[in-house]
Length: 456
Image (cartoon, rainbow, N blue to C red; front, side):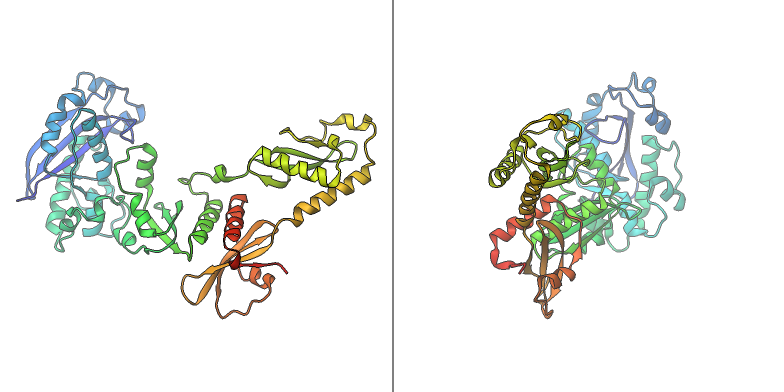
């Protein structure tokens, strides 16, 4: 059976199918040699067209006032697309709109896809840009009515025909196969980079066209996880914008899931990629604070974590902070009038009544007691190295906790003679950590105590 292709171009009110609508559609049916059928129409989007879109396309509210709504032409569009390969320049954009609006009209439709961006990258590599305008300029393909559906669709049809003629290695036939990764990879991501990804545990990075990291993730199987980012039909704007920005992918193999998770957290903290959600939900919310009031007394208080104050001990819940402070008060006999057990704003001026309070312990005596309590807090924070398997048989992985805080990690050669825990620490890579990372390591060490080398 001879293949037929539906070459499509659309204009829209915005960049994603969920929040925007089509304002124009053009379809050219191609039999592999020439265009054999054609359809195009303005569409009333039933919402205002933004000025920025009018400036780009020239389509305004007045032009579409008496145009058909999509429901009026949906059956015609469906009939032209059904059973044909869907072709477009940056195909996932056009496909997402058409599929979404057909579904709204009760027409369930799916199709194999071909992206002329990806086709051109494979068949005619080395161009300065693969946007439709630049590519047609380079290949001397005329475009009339730029940024209108009919004009861009005609140019895409000419480009498609030439790519068919230039394809001496069967690239397009491979792309059409249902199993082909090109059916779902973002238009700007080279397929060879995806194919080169390891099927091992580690961290992967998505880069934009300038090479900047825009997303960091961890996976037990890097290649499989990266592929999952591109599967399914998710039309939310964040995902659509994300996919368009991906121009490269790289990866770093890790020995264990814990090492991958720690590296992911550290890299997000270092790079702060635009498409990674902040790790705030994992950070502790409360803590025990120490501050000096106007009378010179060192006060202990429960409070929310703040950039303005240094915390003695961080915890996840207010209850845990109150319990921790209560324990110190009981063990050291600290005067409760100099402690605050409720979440309150910390200030040196808010306890002025201390100066006139009676029967308080001497300042020096009280402060020495508080210092002893704080030393206990510091002393209960563990220092240890956690060893596990390496990336191969010649090494082992190591994660280091110093006084309860994540210090660093790395890989140590099995032949290294490191008997002292401080020598181990000095052979690791230093990383900026956080409470969440430290708790992951401490919990893991409690679960696997045989993997731990402690201080002393």
